[in-house]
Image (cartoon, rainbow, N blue to C red; front, side, top):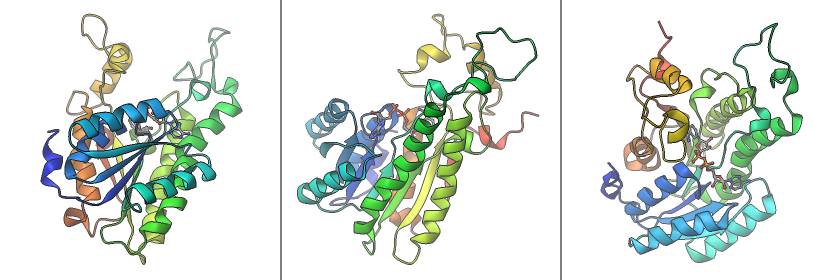
Length: 282
Ligand code: NAD
């Protein structure tokens, strides 16, 4: 499946990916490099992004890492200028930086009258944690779009892909800020699609379901390979009764970014979730 990207020819296109040192976007960036596009890897963690760039370049692709804070306009603008010099201006922007924070996560799924006193409930959630999550996911998508979309207007095939989540459709227990921030991303994706419709930039999103990667495998399965209690809940609510693999996002992403396939697709949020968001549980 990893090889499907080579059937898409995006030669000379400049793809800018934020969060590119992270689990999903590093994987996606390596796969997208097979389209012959030039890949600009943005991450606050330069080492992580450099490692991805090195792997891509060693495999014959074209990539460069840029230390960038997606919450700092000056940093994004500096990166924009560097990319313009190295590769040319952006054609395709993938806003991948995002995530949750423990300070914005409750211990309990449901509030109760008789919880142990040390339980972190909704009432103990930390304002700074909630701000962190909203800023990283929402502003961290909006600010790079402000900077890069200026160059994308009128360019053939220009488009933006945001990363939403299952919790945007229905909030997941324990993570109200992350759920709200991803709902905002889905909404913003539609807003951008409309706003940029007259200047030739499409905007869509993918909403990954529950994926298993090396980083979260230990949280989802015990040492005998049996699903943990939360993993079991996920599987019970996933009609396909399994977790997804990061490579299963690739088809949806390629479809959206390659205008030969999706030139009239604008403002959609594609769930890649084994049917999770379609299932009521009954
Ligand atoms: P990750 O934590 O592995 O990667 C996120 C990357 O973003 C990291 O490399 C981090 O250094 C970088 N980053 C953090 N703050 C930044 C900042 N201010 N500026 C620039 N870079 C910054 O996350 P992931 O699991 O690969 O997720 C990628 C995206 O997919 C996120 O938007 C996440 O919310 C979303 N998502 C992930 C899953 C999943 O199962 N992993 C499911 C649904 C949605």
